[in-house]
Amino acid sequence: MLTDVIRGIDYSDCAEMALVLFCFAFGLMFLATMRLSRNATDRMAAIPLSDNVETPRDEF
Image 1 (cartoon, rainbow, N blue to C red):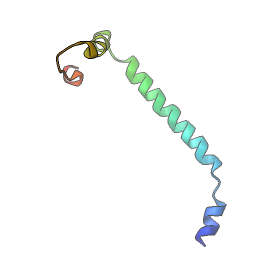
Image 2: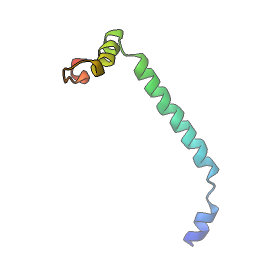
Image 3: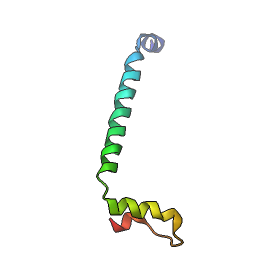
Image 4: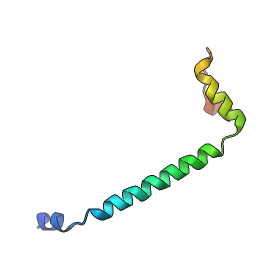
């Protein structure tokens, strides 16, 4: 009975749902990135160049 259920599943819908979920997650990350202030992005970009150990999330 379980094999009949597995054979009857149409996996083409799964690929479309995966694409929709990916586009949604990508859009959310894009919007979150665009909302950052110029000062915040400059401080994050300078982290690899500084000798101080700092956490950028504490200052926002």
